[in-house]
Image (tube, one colour):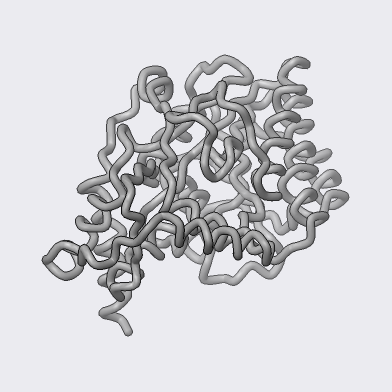
Length: 327
């Protein structure tokens, strides 16, 4: 039974939620964090986990540490996320080279290796809908490229007995994250959310659903090399989600006057690409084009409890309202 777990990325949104659940289940956690991590980001884990201060870009330091330690399971969630101002070398070291060092440790010690990838391996907007595990991969930005490379490494080592599983979450929502879902709520609140006049279908992941998937995989006898796309049971219409958000915040539907032609989003995306701004490029794409996934496999094989984005997105609007009240 897996009891001794190494987990990366607990200062981030996903890793923090997963670590909380694993502590409740009485697992022995070793948590790898960057040196000089802001104390408040990890304060809740103080005296409950074994902290190891190693930056994922410090490949030599990581290699030295791993030579002296072994674990029942390595849960690798940490990464430099897309849109950050880091060099390509740092991206590659943190997201690919560090992953390989953790893979080697897992293979050497016959440990489980659970890797948090991303549906971004299919590109921000997949070439087929719903995207599935056979969909063509698309490295439309450098972050997605590093995830594709890491997955390729895992599959290579699986051929040599690595006991690994790849988890591909869609954009995740919950309290505590200031990414796309929070930005969506903020724009609606300020009446700055412009919507395309075409139907846009999107697919999000409730953080508790993702936590459930990770915790099940720690003990589940999966086939090495298997991949799971994790997202809510069904995608949602963006217009319907925006109306839901507006009703939660203001008890009314969102203004119809905020719908504009899709060509304006294409123009904004083109400018963002010219400026090489990956963050804004993806933002324009995510609200003007459809992106959703086939999640039947993960629900069937892991027996996950189905989650619906509406009304569960309320956890984001409630958290947003709490933040406003504190100001």
